[in-house]
Image (cartoon, rainbow, N blue to C red):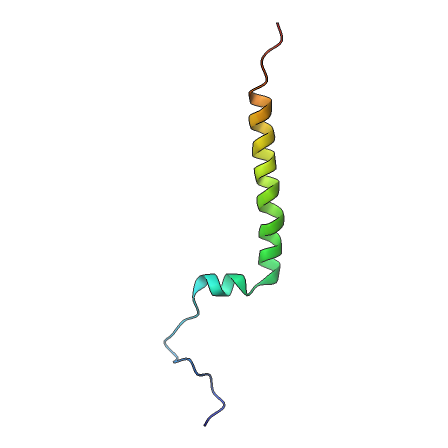
Amino acid sequence: MSEQNDLPKDERIPFFQRMLDNPFLLLFIGVVMPTVFYIMWGIMEIATIPVAP
């Protein structure tokens, strides 16, 4: 048996597998997504505060 890859040359690695194999991308997503959601939540909370008479 040869030491080459078992995958045929025309078979590509799926996008999500490549994404989940990258720890820095996962770290970036894990920091950015909660930050964006909390900022959106804060803006919605500020927008719903009634105006003082």
